[in-house]
Length: 434
Image 1 (cartoon, rainbow, N blue to C red):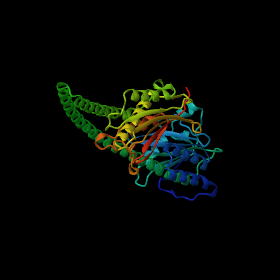
Image 2 (cartoon, rainbow, N blue to C red):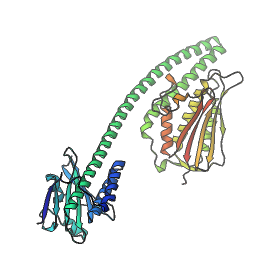
Image 3 (spheres, helix red, strand yellow):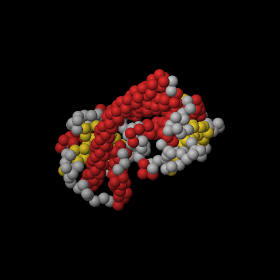
Image 4 (tube, helix red, strand yellow):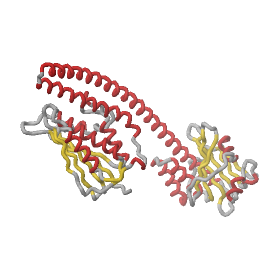
């Protein structure tokens, strides 16, 4: 058996001939750019084969939980995953000894498993194998090249090259592991914050419900007294108070639904409708107009109007999700009008408008109001979960849910606003043919 073992620390920063410099630079740049680990390993294994004039380059990764290695392979001509026996003895031995191993004839080495050669119709001859170790001595895997072309054997220069590439691989894997750890920590923190905020929101809803029930008892007293005294003015006052309580209960119900829906907004193809969004816009407009919406809000008339583009193209969309999204925006618009003090002769106005953006192939649903508007410092926060400009009247759930529903369609939502003049939200959905 012809074999050469070299300490893994030997020649990591070895010299490089000028014709190989470009490949080394490519690997270094890829590591520095922080590309995906799979792509990084493909580049390293492919360049390893090129640099050492080998037929194949292989990266084995070490699995801490299984205390074993698994194979990821790429050749200089074609990068792809292929099956590989887990009991590959040479790579395993290199992982254990952490020594670079150079074998001239694999079939004369007792550790070599020839089954893959038989299955693939391939003949492994020479093998050069190097452990992938970080600066702390932690094992990440093994880098291996197979079959020096022209029936040659790997030399000392190849040993220096594979050690250098293994060093780059260790940096890439360490960066990927660190990124995964950071992302896991972010997700864990976000989940904790989410559940904490959910608890606060539900507490607010419970307290809000208690307050509404107290108000309803007061309204009940007014109505009963009005009926006993046949006092129409008192009856109107009691009924006005009752309607306000009903509206507040409706908002609380939406808040609870939004909490339940936020992490579960996903659509299957069977849940999609092919048609015009004008149908849901018309339904919402008719509902508000039939109910005389807003006429009781602080004695201010609030009218919901429609301005629909009848030439709007059909598209695939989830009817309920977009309906709820527009309803959310209209409800916010009415609240904004209710919060504004209008001059004599003025009234609140909410317009639901549709149009077609031919240049970008989007159908657009606008909800425009002439209400109180949104402060500039709040504009970047209104889509944040649980952020609300309504103080005690809102739980900051409507807009995040609306945006998520729109984005699940591949669309986007934007807003423009001016304090004291009003706000316009725009839902833009891509036109998707059936």
